[in-house]
Image (cartoon, rainbow, N blue to C red; front, side, top):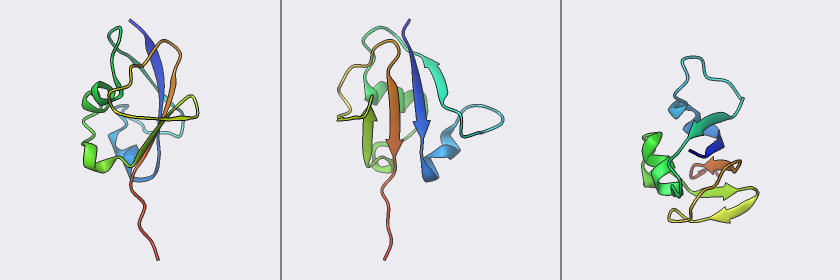
Length: 81
């Protein structure tokens, strides 16, 4: 099973499944060929809570597959003024 590293930013940090949340990346094992959407499901993050996802520094979509060693950065929508 491939292992990926996940970095949740801003308000999405509350979905960190570890008992003690930290700024350290989350390491998750996924099934072979798992997609970004499946990763979000595993973390219980709804699609409307995600603005952008980057895999190894490249913007990706929900149906893109992940592979062993990928680093996934997940950002929420940002509001401000």
